[in-house]
Image (cartoon, rainbow, N blue to C red):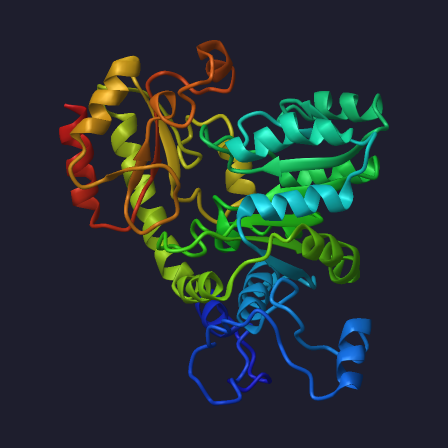
Length: 401
């Protein structure tokens, strides 16, 4: 594509952004299955190692297939904004989060975040970072007055880490207001944008400094590869300090997974449109069903964070959860009755995926601890897929009956 041609829409950007003409004129970016790259001469090697010349050295440090994925996602996260950002592709979302934390925090620092985080993130923050002298503070960041009181009384807090919508209660926090508050106290603000994708929400627009994704989910869209990305709008820091930490930790992606990610991103817009349409219909169906006591979906006026989500998201998205009146055994029975929808963890794929946290991901967590975070015995989490809507509803109906 001629780089002088301005792209005006999400679909075009998802297909063409980041793509460079292959020297052998391959239509799609090749899978550069190389551990290392050669130099024309010793002097070129010196220039590349010193940073005086751009170029690839070793795939733990970078790879042409990675580069297209990185540039494509950065373009999506900054589309329509007067912001430049750099992305670094990782082996998983947790690898990206680990790079972020270890590059921006040091012993004695504190990190403030909210409840109902992704389980891996919660474990990193509450059980691993304290071993490095980094202390977590968990608060309901939907209460801005309480959040400010905490920040005012604790100058050791250096980072505010947000996940919105959050997992699995789909709670939302106000990116704009929290970023403003964080700036008053010189905090770094990071946001996990996995559930929303840049198509539905662009955290950089609201003052966030770093964005992370599990690219495994909606960006890939087909459940074919594990991956993650860390993006930052301080491009110089991303190219220097954070790149150094990333390379040293060794959480790099691989060319095949990066290739699959690139192909998945190309259909992001059309997939998300169908995901979102189906999710709203499913949420309305569940809210009126006699077997369901509660539906957590920010597109419903009944959700406590409905206003916040509508303020910062283009659509409430594809993720929801709902509580069955029949509790633990009801949740198990419901899962066992599903005929088309898929019983599994994870999310973001084209097919509808359902999990029962109380008997699966949170089985070993004490009941009182689960309920503190809104994970009841009858809670079902659902990734609403892009199948025909009538088939999704029919499967849910027969499983609920």
